[in-house]
Each structure stands twice: as C-alpha cells, then as structure tokens.
Image (cartoon, rainbow over all chains, first blue to last red; front, side, top):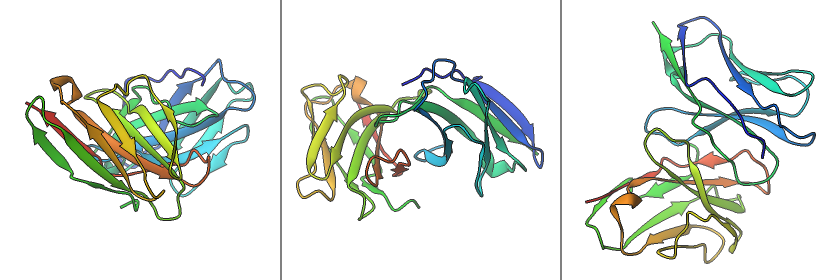
Length: 108
Length: 113
C-alpha cells in the first residue's frame, strides 16, 4: 500500500467548505484512494473512494489530481457534526492501513 | 448504527486475566476484520476472516491472541494473560467480498489494570 501524508490538524468555520489534502506520491496505477472518518468514541466510517476520476456522493467530493499523487476530500458545507479525524488510505489489498489522519475541528 | 455490533462495549480486567470479545457483522457480509486502536493512533489491523477461514494475521497478533469465526457469522477475539499494553480499543469491521468499504462496529474498550 502506498504511504499517505496528511496534515495533523485543520480548522474550518461552520457552513464553509472543508478541504482536506492527502499526499500519496507513491501510489501505483491500480491502487484506490479511500477516505474514512472517525468521530470521537465511534468506529471509523467510510466516506468515499476513487481511482482516477473525481467522485461525489451525499457526504463529500473526492478530487484526485491527474498524476494521482495527491487528492483532496471536500465537505461542501461543514457542520459541527463533521468534527472528526479523517483518514486517507491509498491501497489495493485488504486490509486497510490507517495512518494518523487529520483532526478536523469545525468551529461555530 | 452501521449494523455491526460488538460486545461488551467496555471491559476492565486485571493483568493476567483472560478476556473475550464478540463481534456480530452485517449478516450478508462474508469478510470480518479485527483492528486495535490506541490513543492518538489510527486503527491497526490484527486479523481477518473470509467466511470461517482466517486468511491473514498481523505480526501484532501475539500467541496470547486468538480469533475465531466458527460458522462464518459472528467472531470472537480472545486475549489470554492480559498485559497493560493490551489496553486499547478493539474494533471489528465487516465487508462484502474484497470491497474496501468496511463497516465498523462501535468497538470494545479494554482497560487492563
């Protein structure tokens, strides 16, 4: 699995877009990018994944650069309930390999 | 609620005691995973099953740890002769096939005194 690098923490104002970056410069051609989040005292929750194209679902958008060396998770209108640790994972095989993630604090 | 349940949610034990945790995955999911998470770290993989077969074990899974999934449904994780270093959150997850969309349970928090 490719190594990922994320900032340890970020703040975002409530109602604004939260843009969480992830660097995965060693990703191979068939490895996906996955995003999970973990709200305090809960298990991780799947958000979204992608291979090459940008993806969007009801929770977030995933923007992957053309060279696939980095990606950005976008929460379009962050709420206080989005405060969590966000994990970016680049890989193909089971199981998931989590790093330390980015702690996102949404501020009222 | 993801549909994955774990029991108990909290366990406090004394060093040297044995403990057993249970995980009930989403019923149609054939893969079941165990992870361990310590404070400030992301979850670390321990082992996983496809149906009743244990397909992979991490080096983190010492001889004191054993996991079973006897009928391909629920799973148990047993830790023998617990040590203070075993204190952690133990997470269970399930998935359908090899999909990396894993659904996690709420975890069992173990405290070893």
